[in-house]
Image (cartoon, rainbow, N blue to C red; front, side, top):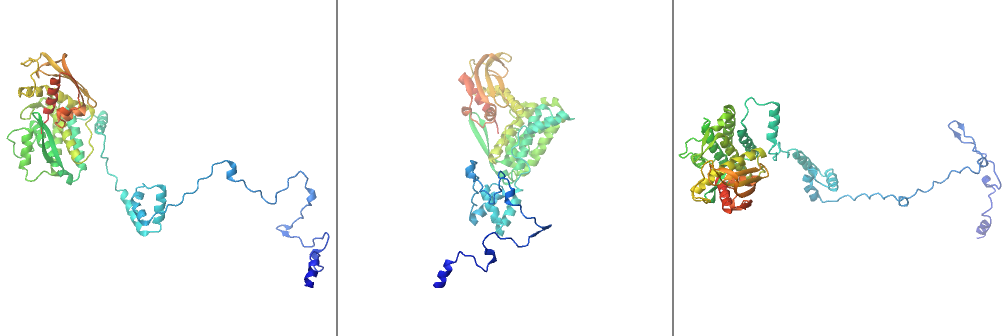
Length: 449
């Protein structure tokens, strides 16, 4: 206890044995440190700095916080997405198609680095993505072929041009052939219902896609016979009508038509276009017999183009394929043919007792003006036609106009094809209701199988 107290009394006194603890200023006797060039010069005394010269801070000042600057705070880093293995495996298909969100993509790619099975599956899926692109688009612009051909012909006219009245048939057969190229073997047996009008009633016939092409092949054969080409029918039909020829082809076939019918139909279409091109424009006056009536070749080619488009639409509907109307110029030519055939169809219905006789019991003499109906077609292929109501040979006259019908172009074609009942045709009507009804039913009677 005594030693501790004595030490406590002298704890502030210097140790006599410690030379560094002498009282008063001591002279530094330690040798100077050597620098790279020899002894370092001694620092100048502090009295050599002027009072105004700023002293270098020995401790750096604290930095200002971003909260004190008023600047927007940085967004916090998102937390990594944690997904189970089964969820990550289900996302591999979307990841291969680049359809994942950034968070899902990061989670999948992190998982692929640790799971060999998923990594192999991801590689197979990524390779399969390159096989999903079809060689050609299925939704081509219907005017693309016409525009390309016109551009080519402007630069280099053909030595043997196709007559203008045959170009709609050439275009529509090419479009239908492109549709047939895209469908599979099983779709050739898809059910198709052909619809047309007989009298005042709509009728139909059930067949297949291959059966429709066989029907077009046999009816186009009527034009082929006129041009001196081979008849696709092995046995001549008893009655040379489209219905009889089609039934004869279906009956004499040993097996139901298959996709093999596409080759003969396509070859016959090419031969028809080639033959009328070599025959020249004068061949357009040759009569083509349909059994109950005749059409000049130029109108018959328009009729075949119209039926090709209509039945191509039936096939497209059966196989769920997008299909557009013809180009406006070709559609206008088809509508014009239907409008020119309306007076004859109206007269045939009147002779059969299916249409009203009009104001007089006798037909108007040929060349005399008579009652007329104005047919206005809107949209694609639009225009106006005056339809004589009393006689096919009567002159249409705006002074004798008794009714006015307004129809969309495609709607009128569907009506003339027997696909739209006359009562359901979306037509703007004004004037003589009886004349309007007769013309709408006459348009539907233009249809046939």
